[in-house]
Image (cartoon, rainbow, N blue to C red; front, top):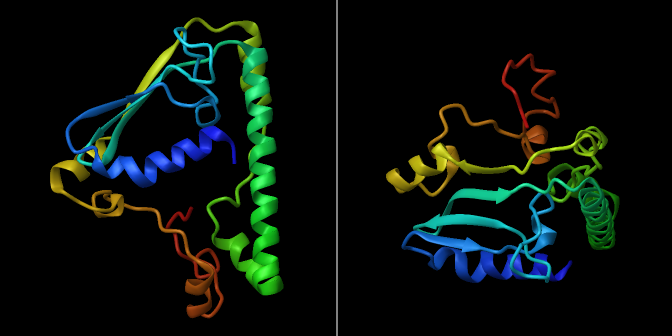
Length: 187
């Protein structure tokens, strides 16, 4: 893991839950914000990004978008390399812990087990030119969580998407949702 990922993990584990009053966390590490513009006031690896926390939960996320196609390509390629090495290390650890069965279970359920690819279409669009851009995401679902004091987002989403785990498939006789003819969408 990079320094930015370690800082982010420490923040999430040690600080995030203590932010009761509305708090803006600014100047995030570049490693966890590959689409954000480098910070104009600092020459280190910080970006122009903030998150709003209330009652220990993230309510909003915002940043100035990176519009430099060369810098963006370098960041995305670095992100792919980092994710690949994390996946390889996790696969190796699962294999050494429990053999092929543990590896198969890890591949089925692990958060780290997703493909990260460089988005060439996005980079092509940046090369044509993109004006200075910024955006903010305010999660209405997170706002409802705050107002209802719900611990899980699944408690407030009207139709939560459920991903069937390997153990759930095993319990249902090994059939997937699609094989059962279920019309629900699964993650």
